[in-house]
Image (cartoon, rainbow, N blue to C red; front, side, top):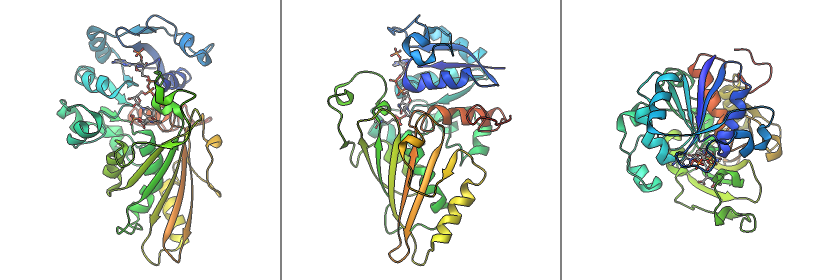
Length: 342
Ligand SMILES: NC(=O)C1=CN([C@@H]2O[C@H](COP(=O)(O)OP(=O)(O)OC[C@H]3O[C@@H](n4cnc5c(N)ncnc54)[C@H](OP(=O)(O)O)[C@@H]3O)[C@@H](O)[C@H]2O)C=CC1
Ligand SMILES: CC(=O)N[C@@H](CCC(=O)OP(=O)(O)O)C(=O)O
């Protein structure tokens, strides 16, 4: 069995990683960690997340620098479900040994360091790790993920958006005169577990935020290869992202061309489901799938695509497991879709 640890195991994505690793045929959980002064240190993870009762027994350990060095030498896989700054600060020490590191934060997703000062609020200081990190959009960068030591697992909105848009871009169907327009609604778990006024029960309604300035805009643009207009919304539900995306395709593009772009892109990728109707959140929540559907107005060339994921799974933890499976030479769906063989 491969030895895995989760840092940030008390958070929403961390707990999902713990659940997935606990039932995975090839990984055993060796350590679960929280920050040095965490109020959850020394608690069982199932005390913090009771849905894990009867599934996982591990205790949350407080992190120290010596623990980080120990993990880098003794783990096969390190999962970081921590804030961007913590992932950024720890990456050099975590990569001194042979462990593969799967970072769910945004700290290693983009090559352009200016993005970090502009959108993340910190200067990136670990350029060699940033340079070598591989973006972990599992269906699109499988070969590169297999070779990488640091995998930057994509953000939740970028996963929903890029999965919908890349088949069109790769087939040169998009008309460059119009930027893709992405409107996406996320559940509140997207903001993490820590209490804040904006994500508290009585405050959350349905509202756009981060308009023309969200950090996922440069991430989507970087991996799509064109600028986009991205407008996230916070919805009053717990989990899931529904993105509705409008693009213009080249004059003369037919519905059959669009269908075949999606079918070819995802024929070998069971985590992406091409539906006969527009997706709905209930069908993807608590699953590792991304559901897609689209409709083209062939006369005007406007195409609308619907994309739905669970932000904590395909948008974070289950995509990290897909990447880990690829890195260690297993089927990407192992431990995620029942009946998958290694
Ligand atoms: N929620 C989502 O939908 C998605 C989140 N992500 C990214 O994944 C990462 C985790 O997100 P999420 O699970 O929502 O976050 P949470 O806030 O739910 O959890 C964060 C975890 O990190 C720990 N932590 C906080 N501060 C530090 C620190 N300074 N050093 C070490 N550990 C720390 C927390 O525990 P404690 O403070 O007790 O130590 C907790 O275990 C973030 O980078 C987020 O941007 C990516 C995709 C989707
Ligand atoms: C609803 C909500 O607040 N969502 C988060 C995105 C969560 C995510 O994907 O995170 P990272 O890119 O930070 O890893 C946000 O908009 O900041």
